[in-house]
Image 1 (spheres, chains in turn blue, purple):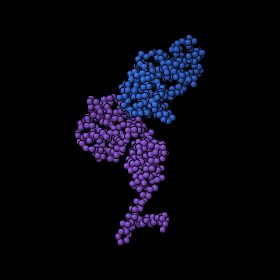
Image 2 (cartoon, one colour):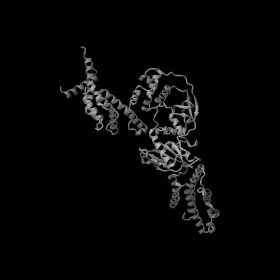
Image 3 (cartoon, helix red, strand yellow):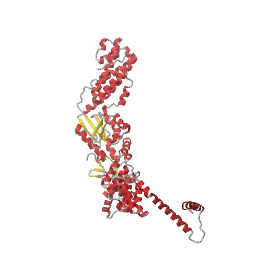
Image 4 (cartoon, helix red, strand yellow):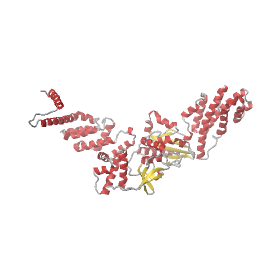
Length: 285
Length: 322
């Protein structure tokens, strides 16, 4: 019997949430009270596959941000065979009773979505979510952006907005910011006669190599090296379409790492500019 | 009666999926907050106390450890330690769980009440006699008082049992109607029915009225129901006219009137109960004094008692006059 381990109240929530998910995402590869994989230390109340490359799992529980989700987040995030998005389904009453939305915010912070079911069985997605492996919390983003200029912060936040709906495009946008910072450095280096016009107008990797070879940048080779690695590692990540769920999971993890790397590289380059007395005039397309 | 037999048992690591819950387990409620604590503990330290199971048709059936088993499933544990015991008889199976659970932790009374009829029925089948309260107490490990309380819940009509069950599924701090509420209410209604039968026309309507009044605060405390019993027993204990008691109870049970139990009791019965109490005390003092002065020898009264009597005499003279 599906959901027979749940009490009557939770059973109703589970049934309504399942009907809602089946209606919106189909019932492919559905599992009720079974494990997604042995390596994940959590069994959702149910899960299904909205598309070939993605698992949507639901935990039905009245207590918001229950221990089961708290402890499983790491395993879900690092699961290699498919990206997994996780929603907690609870009663509307439980959701509204959360004083100051403390536990709701905890769920969101950790990348979980929230679905509520009212007394009449009406289902509402209160907070959408993306696969946990893709999730970068607002707190983490703010912390990573800490020492950037306000203009760069805004640009990365815009890139993050894109990243949330499309990880590949988000990474691409973050890459363009890094590219713009490198261009900015190269342009000013050219004006000061450090590199030639040709070197300043070459390919991005060549531009970095040119800066790297100059004695004026001798003390900043770590930052330039990081920028070179970033360009090499992530430039094409966004454009490679995954062929299966495993590749989709890998792409998501790479995009997340790339996005955070882009911020780290931009931060390092920003310090280079400060130390060399260069102005940060960033133009992205 | 059940005879104790030596049962060979052995330890085994078992996948939780190979275990099924015991349909005779009376435990109905697994509250999130309690489960969360256990889940966190098992995640950190694993299952330290093995479950108890028995083998049945290629599977294992739980005797003890349903909460741990549920946590193991939720945590997707691959194997859990279990003590495999001999398959018990149906009555042994039930009583094992009563003795394991009811003695070790506070089960909800409704949980016990729901399974008590099965125990009574199986006892009758195995022993050919009806189980007395004493028998039930002995085999289940419950006190006779607990059994009496369970019986009150056993007799609840389905709609009220369902109402209670729904409440009990809520976290403790959100529960408005407790088992104690229903136990106290049923006890009072039983007294009313036996002492002033004409006061209750429809028992379910009376229940609904009392529940509504409790939810809205008109009845402030579940111990108020004891006062309702006192109103009903006032006919025999105080000599109150049945019509007066009936009228007072009718006010309390009337869903249209915002009349509480304490209000009626204080207004019409409390003083009479107080007077009865004091009258009994006076009788007791008088009896003592009469006994002390029965023979011709001088009355011997201790200094403290004498002082109290003098104080009482002064008070009586002030109130009644010399």
